[in-house]
Amino acid sequence: MSNQPLTTEPIPGLFNRALSDYVSAISAQYPDAEFYKERMRDSGRGEGPTLQITVCQNDGIIEEENFFYANQSELDADLENLVFYLEFA
Image (cartoon, rainbow, N blue to C red):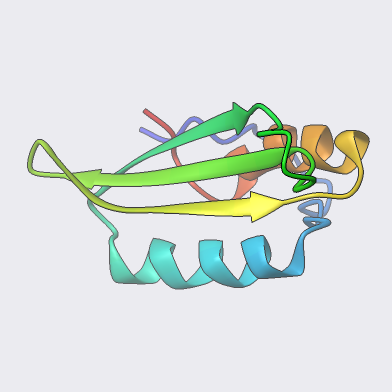
């Protein structure tokens, strides 16, 4: 069962292009995986706000990827819109 919102509206785009490309690739590569998303705190090294995607399958982590943002509001929007692209556990 999908947790994607039911809508007739167009699917919103993602601000972070690298995230958009990554989501397309992992959804095809790991169709049976569980996906997790997490907002990470700024490490203080000037990276800015970060979104981490974790891909799990068979009770193990397959991969984790971080996506950096210059703008907190764009990260917030991408976090909200990711449900249109992946099914999160």
